[in-house]
Amino acid sequence: MSLERAHTTSKMPSSPSNRLPTVDGFTVEEQIGSGGFSRVFRANQHGLERPVAIKVLNATFEDERQRRTFERECRVMGQLSTHPSIVTVFASALTSDGHPCIVMELYAGTYRGVGRLDIAEVVDVGAKVADALAAVHERGIVHRDIKPHNVFVSSHGQPAIGDFGISSIENERTTTGGAGFSINYAAPEVFEEGGAGAPGDIYALGATLFQLATGEVPFPHTGDPADKTRATIHKIITAPPPSLGLPDAPPALDRLLQRCMAKLPADRPASAAELAAELRRIQARTGPSDGERVGASHRGASVSVERAIVEPDREPREDESSSVTVVRDRGRPRVADPDPVPTDEPTSRRGLFVGLGVAVAAIVVSAVVIALGVSGGDDTAPSTTVSATSTADGDGDGDDRFVVLVAPTELAVTRTAPGRYELTWTEPQPDVDYQVSLVGQDEVRFADEPEFVWELDDDAGGACFEVRTVAADRTRVSQSTAGPACA
Image 1 (cartoon, one colour):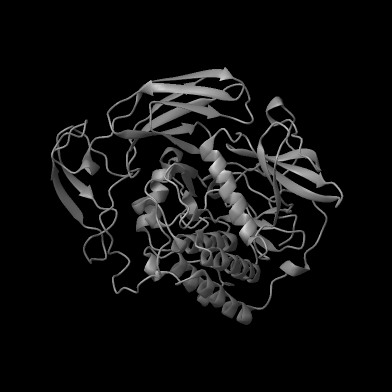
Image 2 (cartoon, helix red, strand yellow):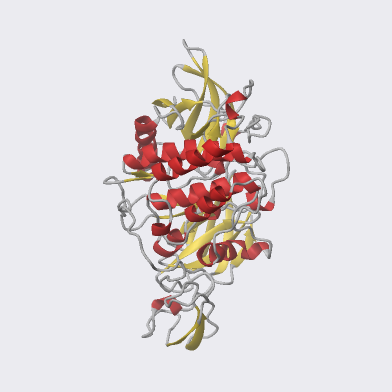
């Protein structure tokens, strides 16, 4: 890939919130990225005189959850960074004021927002990333957030995966941590079961390669922006995997990416190693890409930050801006999925999925619910008539999935310091969580109490927020919102 097309990060404006840290053995030169949990700096390593990227957590080790996330990422990347397609970690350290940081190889940028790539390069990138995922999965690790933003490109045009901050490690998972996913690249089971194993990474890589080949996410949303998240999830769960629709794309590649994005994990390639092998067979027929012939000097970052990367110089396409990254509780620990068992069930045979599209108009209802997944074997989704007696407080005899979700009220926002916003609202009903969103941004966060603190790295002096009620199992969200409220 031409480095001119790579999404590179540029120098950020100076402010008290992003002043340069001091790290022993390094000269920190500039901030090149920031997010909700960390900042990324370009630095020079003393003695070796080489450029590096230093990722610094915003929190100190006093925050137990973020400390565990940081230590997990250090261990994961330290174990895996000898692989040629995984970002290299050099060291972990502390800043002079006690913030943990990790020192990594500096990359040119990422594949975010690069538009359409040559098909041969898509196949080459896919094979190398699949090889890297095979190494990751062999260690019992699931990446959980494969997407163009987290596939980095070197000065020689070589891809590498990074940002293991939300990965799951078998036998090391904690119920106190958080997990994340990016909606456009998340497998159906993420929404139905609250998580995904190695097959989820295969789905995400398939969605990533689809975007690199076509310039669009697999399920773009063109309707009401306010309905984007719900509509996208609905398509991921119900719509068939899309075709590339490109005259220069080999039919074998089209079929393979559709398999990667199959609704059922068992219908996808059995492993990342198998996916890599199939891509290399396609590559043998299509010829090599130009990636290895690319080389140039550049400035850029080697790590994406958990929830944000500096925007490219051009206006983002709708499909890029719709890459919502959701932070959610991990909940009950899950082990890596076992080898998938072949099944003769058609893709449409899915358990009833209720959520994100079920609106109940009265407190006591007799509802006709359109199932987003089908329990029968028909090709079309039939209507399922449900007679349920549900109350707003969940005391009825009906299935809790049909309980009315009432939007919060009395949302208040206070700007207590530059970049710090404290939100409070009235709890509408017991046993629910809340989805908090920053108006004008794709990021959403979750709260389990009717209060929340949102910290912004780059505060322009005001922000507006909205809050929705979310079912405790995170499968449904209220149709209406509290807000926007601003400060």
